[in-house]
Amino acid sequence: GLLDILTAVPDPRKRRGVRHTISTVLAIALAATIAGARSFTAIGEWIADVPTTEYARLGIDGTVPSESTIRRCLQRLEPDQLDALIGSWMWLHTNTTDGRG
Image (tube, rainbow, N blue to C red; front, top):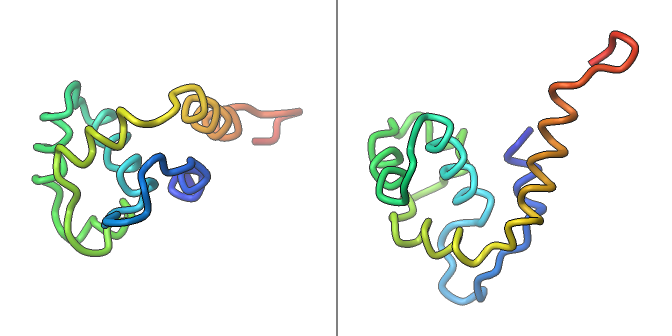
């Protein structure tokens, strides 16, 4: 799934002190954006409203990343790399070849 693809994104942070995987932060940001969030604050508000029963689907296995954690992670990413991964995933899931998906 998409969460598996997001694990291929290199984490730009130093390993020391990392509490949330980059794939979890990206999954939250993508889900919030799809749900209509248009700012880092809105992403933080969206994840605060997600029921704890849905955490596992986003890769959360403990505490929820804060808005500032999400913002710092996203600001440090190489945008072209993330675009290429998500674009490839979307292409695979939306295109068909000879009637097969």
